[in-house]
Image (tube, rainbow, N blue to C red; front, side, top):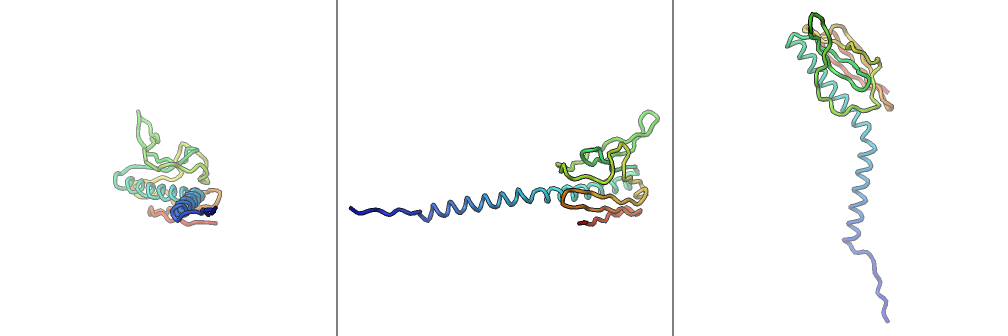
Length: 150
């Protein structure tokens, strides 16, 4: 009686290699997602901040950036019933990473104020997360410079 040797076919090997490659790429993407989400959040915030500064100049409004304790938010100075107050402006920033925080406390007053003539005063803002920091510097002309820090 003859014994039949059985092994894996080429198709079976290719399927196993495809699944292993897929799992590897998903795990690498998952491990790197923390850094990417922080960088993406800061880039979205920087773009939205520049847009708010431009709107303040072109619309003749006073706008600001503040921290509400969970995420940054933009505000605009409005007059309601004979008094001035800050009203939150809806700006789509996407999901904000829980571990990304500024170096200033939550406050109803904005940390950074944009006026029709530019930034009210030059400011340095520091964003921190477990793996790094990024410093923002707004000059009095309303220009934002960012720098990654170790």
